[in-house]
Image (cartoon, rainbow, N blue to C red):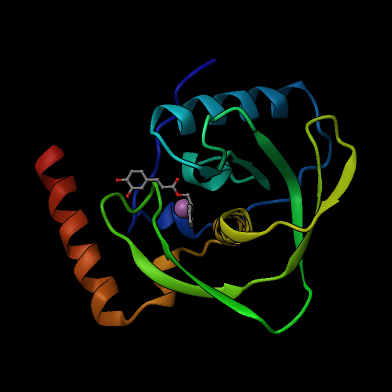
Amino acid sequence: MALLNILEFPDPRLRTVASEVKQVDDKIRKLVDDMFETMYEAPGVGLAATQVNVHKRVIVIDVSEDKDQPLVFINPRIEVLDQDEYSYEEGCLSVPGFYEEVTRPQHVRVHALNKDGEPFQIEPEGLLAVCIQHEIDHLDGKLFVDYISNMKRQRIRKKLEKQHRARA
Ligand code: QAP
Ligand code: CO
C-alpha cells in the first residue's frame, strides 16, 4: 500500500473531469487500497481519485464511527428521488481547515460498480448521502466551495495559496 499526495484547492487539476473505468482490474483495486490508506491516515470520511490526481471514476468512503465500513463506488451515478433538500456543513481534504454549509438533494439512489466490477445500488441516508454526492462532484471537477459565495470562495483561495507559498 502507499500514501498518495492530496491535491489542494485551487489546484487546477481538481477541475479535471474523470473518465469511466472500463475494466475493474488489479490496477484499480490497488488504487482503491491506496486511496483507503490515504483517507484513513488523513483522517477523512471520503476521497475521490481526482483528489490524488488519478482521473478515473473511483470513490472510497467510510462514514462509520469505528472506521470499519469501507465503501467503494466505481462509475457512480446519482438518481435524485424527490425534491427534498438537506443542508450539511461540508469539509474536504482538498480544502483543509474550511467548512461551509451546502444544500443538496436528500433522497438519492446511487448506482455503481463494487471492487469486483459488479453493479449494485444503494439509497444512502444522512451523512453518507451527502458524502457520496460530494465525492461524485470531485469526479466532475467540482468542489463544495463552488456552492458558496464568490467572496467566501476567494477568501478561502487566498488563505490556502498563502499556506502553499509558505510550504514551498
Ligand atoms: C467529504 O471530507 C465530506 O478540513 C469528505 O482539515 C463532505 O473527509 C464529508 C478533513 C461532506 C462529510 C460531509 C477536512 C480533514 C476531511 C479538513 C473529508 C481537515 C482535515 C474531510
Ligand atoms: Co472533497
